[in-house]
Image (cartoon, rainbow, N blue to C red; front, side, top):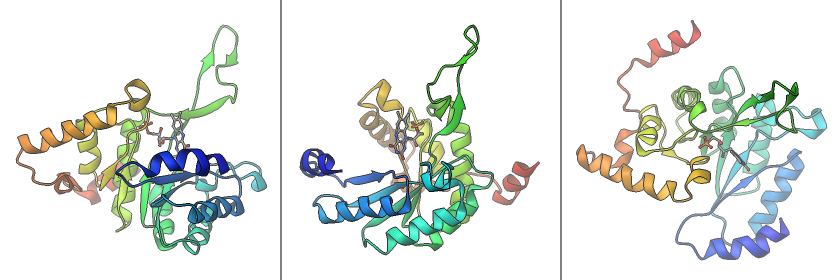
Length: 237
Ligand SMILES: Cc1cc2nc3c(=O)[nH]c(=O)nc-3n(C[C@H](O)[C@H](O)[C@H](O)COP(=O)(O)O)c2cc1C
């Protein structure tokens, strides 16, 4: 934290953009301590709270798989700041809409949907897991269909903005997230393949919109031609 404030933040402060700090922690007190330290520092415009972290006190189960914990973290952090709080939800739950609602009710300004899915890779010859942690976070194009469904479900449950993330590699992918209800998108894994992925997606999104006479990219939000009721019923079958 000291190194982030002393070394990284001065560099980030010089950029002509909003800086959102993503906070991970292993206890609610630790989330609060990190946010409070950042409140003292200059140059952070808002916080994205990664609730997919293991809750050390409760035996390592992710905070974000408990509605009560998600609400409690959001409430505690809300009382510490007037800046934007984005709660980043895990997809590793049955009904993400329940988590979206409790976070919104507890004071979140927006939600990020989704974090990584739990995945596993196995070396068949050695009969060993390939990851030292046995399971790990699955990201990238493989998770896009899951992410779209989760954004659709979360956006249908709350009136605060939902930021779509999960496997976005192109402007068309971003458009899909906007259509299912996202107000904005984030690009993660694509940056590891091409650090300029974000800027390219923004430029391509601009072109996508002008070619189709779409004045503002936000006009795409929620524009999916589908009966939400029908889709939700189908998802239960
Ligand atoms: C190497 C790696 C590191 C990540 N670190 C974080 C993190 O520190 N905090 C967080 O909230 N999500 C983290 N994520 C999750 C991503 O931000 C994102 O939610 C997820 O990977 C899905 O999006 P993507 O397919 O565009 O990567 C990480 C993902 C990867 C692959």
